[in-house]
Length: 448
Ligand SMILES: *[C@@H]1O[C@H](CO)[C@@H](O)[C@H](O)[C@H]1NC(C)=O
Ligand SMILES: *[C@@H]1O[C@H](CO)[C@@H](O)[C@H](O)[C@H]1NC(C)=O
Ligand SMILES: *[C@@H]1O[C@H](CO)[C@@H](O)[C@H](O)[C@H]1NC(C)=O
Ligand SMILES: *[C@@H]1O[C@H](CO)[C@@H](O)[C@H](O)[C@H]1NC(C)=O
Ligand SMILES: *[C@@H]1O[C@H](CO)[C@@H](O)[C@H](O)[C@H]1NC(C)=O
Image (cartoon, rainbow, N blue to C red):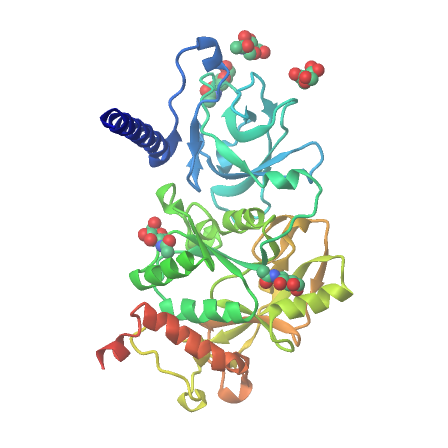
């Protein structure tokens, strides 16, 4: 009996020991900024053929020996002779020839392929620009990771980017998890929790099932709100620490706003989002948080798009007119029976029911796209696609862009009142209140 107990105890300790060492190994390999897996040192020959195990888990990774930054790598076989598209942020005056290196299922082959570097056409005069680096995978390599080397980089120790969207390699139909994904290209500095809560809840009512937010920084209340949406799974927060690598511009034009890159790298994040959701979402909506794509004859965007797509099966890009709703005028009497939300930081979008005009020129539109039909995008137009494009008539739907500061205030009689947002009040107000209350953001209510 005692013998049996001792044996059992021995087994127990053995198991416990194995378990602990497994936990330690797993923890060590996940704890680092860059995951570092110790290389086997028994067999020198094998070492030279094993991939150096430095894999970036950052959204922005400096490329060694250059002034450039790498963002992410995706399988993309839509451009002839290429397999992989790397999204990067390159310094325009220092672009040099590069070569693509691969990790082929753990094996580090002694071959590279030339990299083809394409700059995004919109640089707006800034020093840094969004780039697409196209690579061909060498023969007999089932590539899992990719990186870039300068022509005379003899060290050959790249920081790997994992290759995503591996499924896109085949031609098979992909079952998407989401129908509608909104990409919010940049969040920095704001703390407008009320506007975010209202807008996110409204998106949900309109049929959006995922919102992606590229986050550089935000205020404490908004952080609290977004942590909650992200835990729930409605929002995906993508860290976007671009300010750690350069001085990003607050504006869109270098000559007017200065800085190193257009609007916190907006073009890079929009394209990143497009590829990130290519296999996951039927439609991707490219607009800002202060904009709502509003259907005017249907209850949801989903229904509107289904109706349009039935008549226009070849369309892969929908342009949506951008209509602006200024901060002023604002008339108390027109406000209607809205809650006050006093003490909640941010704008109340429901108060802005005066429509000024539509934007014109190159700012005129924002976009809804079928991501697999688009190769690259800018903010207001698509820069590469083979898909047909269609402008949604504004009676069917347009952007409610609010609140916007306008150069002057128009008299009330010249301004159209548009209370379309209020059609959603019955569901929207209770939903917003529920979120704010749960997070303790309804401060005045809490005090009384
Ligand atoms: C890799 O290729 C280069 C040139 O093709 C050659 O000089 C070198 O010896 C090769 N290295 C190994 C480890 O095979
Ligand atoms: C690829 O693999 C095939 C079959 O194993 C072999 O015949 C061929 O020579 C290989 N090609 C290269 C470039 O290594
Ligand atoms: C690469 O090599 C060339 C020729 O040897 C040299 O002129 C150039 O400065 C090198 N570039 C870098 C970045 O070291
Ligand atoms: C997506 O849309 C289709 C057809 O409109 C619908 O059947 C499906 O339930 C929707 N999926 C999600 C996740 O909402
Ligand atoms: C946004 O980024 C900032 C700065 O890294 C971070 O402190 C904050 O927690 C992030 N918020 C969310 C919701 O991810």
